Amino acid sequence: ESAEKGGYEHFMLKEIHEQPKAVQDTVGAYVKDGAIDFTEVGLTDETLKNLERIYIVACGSAYHVGMAARYVLEDMVRIPVEVDLASEFRYRNPILVPNSIVIVISQSGETADSLAALRLAKERGIPVLGIVNVVGSSIARESDYILYTYAGPEISVATTKAYSTQLIATYLLAVQAAKVKGTIDDKRYTDLIAEIQTLPGKIQKTLDDKERIQWFASKYANAKDIFFIGRGIDYAISLEGSLKMKEISYIHSEAYAAGELKHGTISLIEDGILVVGVLTQKNLFEKTLSNMVEVKSRGAYLMGLTTYGNYNIEDTADFSVYVPKTEEYFATSLAIIPLQLMGYYVSVAKGLDVDKPRNLAKSVTVE
Ligand code: G6P
Image 1 (cartoon, rainbow, N blue to C red):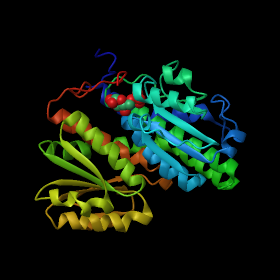
Image 2 (image 1 turned 180 degrees about the horizontal axis):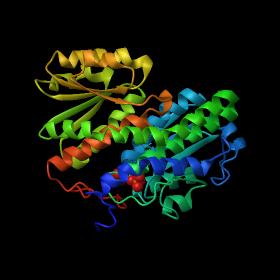
Image 3 (image 1 turned 90 degrees about the vertical axis):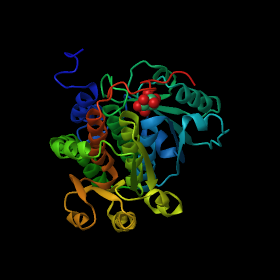
């Protein structure tokens, strides 16, 4: 097993470091000569052009990819996107309109609820696009269109590289759909693809800063509660950051839409509680910052996660983490890296079984 870990202490750390390559391989599979090519997926421009609504259905971290993708797709393509937990979707008798598509996102391709959601969509005559990592899995076989992610085998229960490749799949889909629907012009199309191609290098750069996170994580390993706040895409990032923290470190954590704090959660803030503010979106920066000021005045210890250049975060945050600048649509791919590392290092500092956390399974094939 130690050979399989390639010199890393845990599979999770190895997989975190494999993200530049996993993302590169996924981009490389669908970008040819500066354009997106979905021939392998079976998805034609004609199909994308006729789309009037998208439903994204998934569980766990794949659901969080859907949450991030909704902001990207709606803003870029201007069509409504609904995101559902598969376990909810399958029992709520969903209204599925014509000219729509159901996107099922799943690393394993075997999650019972996601598979049931896929079957429900097909029974209703709605085509299904699977975004799946495991070749030949049930969801891959039963989908009408299949967009494989190229993360390679993922062993650690807490997903990292599969999540990162799923994000890429949704970006490519958004950019291609925006092009055929005419919501972006040719220049923007080319620029967005070029930016996606820079992500592996920027993820690598973020990984190179890991020691600061390791130091910070060891300081907070005994925390009882951690809150993650953000708005828009930063809220989607917070959801995944919080899940990473709780699943492997057993620290109670919650992700909250920053503007919603005052409707309840702020009553939980007391001296020394760690609040992580995520601020990658320019138009929301000041808004989330003011929420950070609110929790700070109630005693919270603040970590700010933002992009290089936003150094005024240091006027408010007690500890600041910077990620490289990218197109704001793609910020999740970079901002999630320090949060994965934080979950990992807290778990290690507590001496927990990082790769096999209690009560959790890699693939949930029963309901
Ligand atoms: C389990 C895993 C998660 C994963 C979820 C969905 O809970 O621990 O990491 O996000 O299942 O799995 P899937 O294979 O459908 O992506």
